[in-house]
Image 1 (cartoon, rainbow, N blue to C red):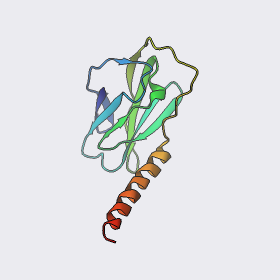
Image 2: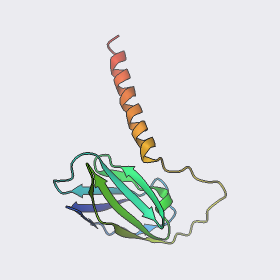
Image 3: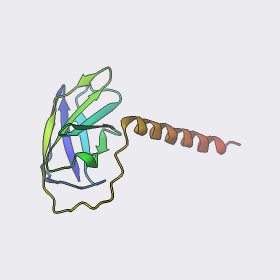
Length: 134
């Protein structure tokens, strides 16, 4: 399922009507459209209470960190460039019927881990391309 947002200048608002239920993992995505001044690398910030998670946008979309998909609400904002910021919009999250087990889930990668993964992917693609010439 995908939550959709529109960012006009510094104002973000949600454009879908999906109902979000707590406790999902690797399921909920977010997609953004931006006004023309939003150029360059963009980062979304998702929050629940005091917990905040930054996620790099790829093609103006990303996976919502599972850690914030809890009953109550998810705060969503974005930033980019030499610091264009937006307000925060809140997405209501309904309680699920899921009962959590004792095995902890793997944490969402930090923004730095995401950058390293992107660089490793680029390095691998360059290496694969060069191997074809030797």
